[in-house]
Amino acid sequence: MMRFVSVAILCAMGSTPLIACEKPKAPSSIPDGATASKEDMLAAKKAVDAFRSGMEEYLACEKNFANLDAAQNELSKVADRFNLQIRAFKAKG
Image 1: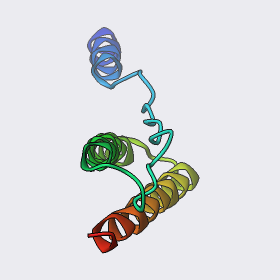
Image 2: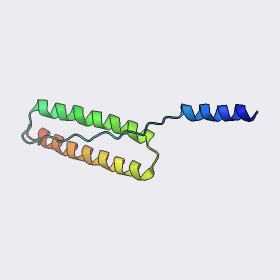
Image 3: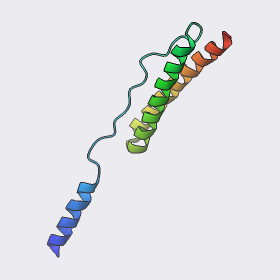
Image 4: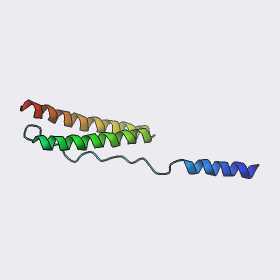
């Protein structure tokens, strides 16, 4: 019986992911909306969307509250920077 319990514990441990959650890197730059082309802004949107998607996966995986809070703050800062440039891009007409 003890051998069965040991095997069951080892199997359960083997089914849990041993790979740490991988935090995505924020886009290296966001173009200045006042001077950027439409193509530049679309490329930035694609980069920000990929970052957001990766960050959502990270947030679902990460269990450390300090890391979760820092990641959420970083995601908000990137979104705020991008939205500021989108408003500048739209304002130029």
